[in-house]
Every structure is written in structure tokens, then in C-alpha cells.
Image 1 (cartoon, rainbow, N blue to C red):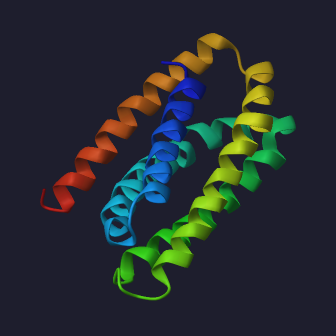
Image 2: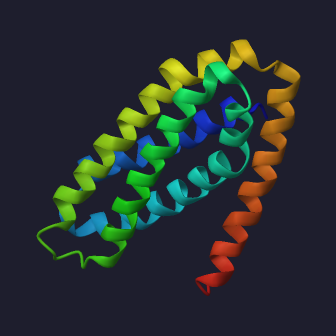
Length: 151
């Protein structure tokens, strides 16, 4: 699968989870958050390990890539904070809302600005190869996360 298609599929999965959060009672949000966190952990991992390093090699993609890295840093901070909160904490719902807003903004920038630039700079064949590497890395990451959580 093409790297950009893979990342867009991840974006769509997370957006569906965001829609579930908006459509459900607060009492269901901790469980949904755990699913969101698992998706975002795997997604940011493959972007940072494989996709972003390749983009940084291209001068015209460097600034937007560095911005993406900073947005990931901020999202990871929120994910850690949310994971450490009890669901009855008064901070949980507002923090979850801000996380969702930040991720939605990040996705809009990637899909609206970054990905079109990437497609102009990096050829389809290389995007396919990157996508294959990213799919394999994602599977390995998810297996290691499942194993370390004892599931």
C-alpha cells in the first residue's frame, strides 16, 4: 500500500473513533480513548521512524515535516496525560476534546498541504516501498505493544 494511503487510512480510523466519542456518554470515553491512543501511538511511530526521516531528506519538505514532528510531540504529551487521568477527573473530558481538535488540525495539514507536496517530490514507486515498510513496522509495533501490555 502507498505510504500516503496507509496514513490516510489511519486518519480515517481515528476520525471514526472521534465521532464515537462525540456520539456517546462521557462514561464510555475512557475506553474509546484507549483505542484512540493505540491507533495514534502506532501511527506516530511509523511516521517518525520511516516517513518523516525520508521527507526530511527533501529540502522543500523539511519545514512542514519539522512542524509535523512538533505536533506529534504535543499529541504524545496529551496522550500521556490522559492515560494517567482517571475517567472521573474533571480534566479528562476537556483534555480529550483538545487532543481531538489538535489531531484534526494535524490531519488537515498533512492531507491538505504535506501529502500533495510529498506526491510531487517522491515518486509513486518509492511511496509504495515506503508504505510496505511502514505496514510491516506498524504490525511489529502493535505486536510489541500488545505483548508488553500483557494482552
